[in-house]
Image (cartoon, rainbow, N blue to C red):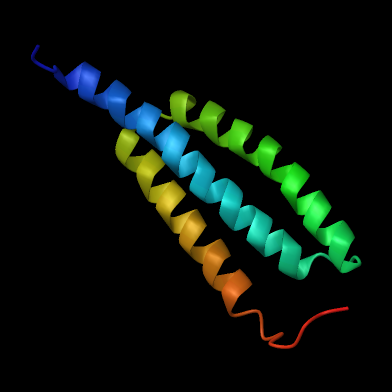
Amino acid sequence: MILTKARWALALRILAALVGGYAVAYAVTAFLAVYLPLARPDRVVFSSLASFAVWTAVVVYVFAARSTTRVWLLLVGLTTVLCLAAFFSGDWRTRP
């Protein structure tokens, strides 16, 4: 079975929705767990619950975007920025 250009585009969008959506949801969870001005358990619970809404929004965006390249660039860029911001938060001690 030969994959045509349309099938490759669909396969890349499905991969972006699954893998890219998970990566962005993880990055948002890590970012919110560090930066929300709440107690630690509340930050973790809120950011974990918000990740489901983020993943759903990413899936909708992936299939609504015009270009697969634009989708991948946005997902990789957003994940990178949020993960780096969470990792280099400047708060190296344990927050209460």
